Amino acid sequence: GEDVEQSLFLSVREGDSSVINCTYTDSSSTYLYWYKQEPGAGLQLLTYIFSNMDMKQDQRLTVLLNKKDKHLSLRIADTQTGDSAIYFCADLYSSASKIIFGSGTRLSIRP
Amino acid sequence: NAGVTQTPKFQVLKTGQSMTLQCAQDMNHNSMYWYRQDPGMGLRLIYYSASEGTTDKGEVPNGYNVSRLNKREFSLRLESAAPSQTSVYFCASSRTGRELEKLFFGSGTQLSVL
View (tube, rainbow over the protein chains, first blue to last red):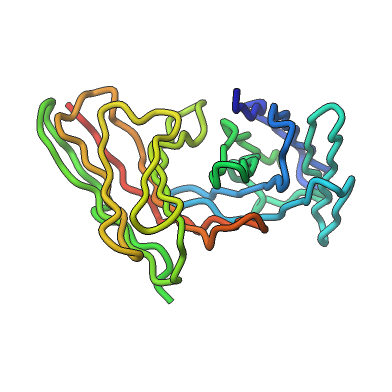
């Protein structure tokens, strides 16, 4: 079946790195995404990775993909208070032209 | 650009009442989606429309109907609202195709069914 799983909460100290993990079941994934949702707002695309890549870096963000284990992670370096949000992992089921989301990980920052 | 516009932003219904959530996008996107967001369950796909004239069920379609009125508009209807439909509803759109699919989201509708 179609499933994307994430842990619900993560708390990190300001300035540390945050690592948010995600697992998925689709064996034919083409694109995997990370979306960010700030309070009271809709989701915004943060970054994505194509399935033939192992890693993608974009400023403070690093996405790692282990296709064999169907595991995706998002690392945020030097975490700031503005990074407080819910982060959603998502998988494109290109055969059906739809995107399936995980439950979201709420990232909170400690001073 | 307005992007994806949803109305209303808030709504309170009594059990058994009906209502329609409206969504419109001005990006000439082919695909449109309705999701519901519940605590601890992330976003679950209710219905989607891969292109004008087509609609398909998502993960949780029961109790809902949709209409793809034209390329711009995709509405979600609750015929007889139930408390289990209390949720935040998001409309989204995307260009479509086998390439990168970036979803653009509306700001959400908070619906309470009493």
